[in-house]
Length: 137
Image: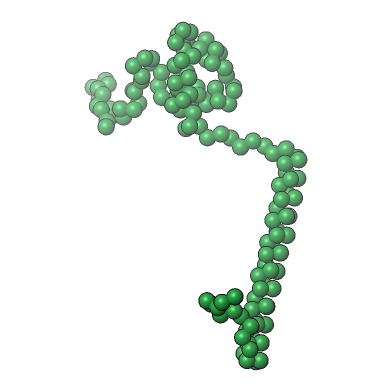
């Protein structure tokens, strides 16, 4: 919903979410999300935030804990740079995957060759090599 605000004789349409604040404080949602991201990335501690932004020291930790619970899922963490050992392990695993894919392809080709051999033998020699479905053992 949008609400109309009058400013200097002009009508301005403003989104409801722009002015939304909690009943307990006057901090906007964008500030709360930013503060949670700062806390999650460890660029600021809770006590530093309380002092820096004049948050009530007695209820501040509880308030910030509630903000973290509410907004921490919205934060997308930045990828962490891989170490040299992790990069080497990744390359080794990629090589292992390629080798296994090659083995799988070879096994598939071997299976096709054996099935073709059986088909030709059954056709040319007129013998049944494959088991019939439902045959008793």
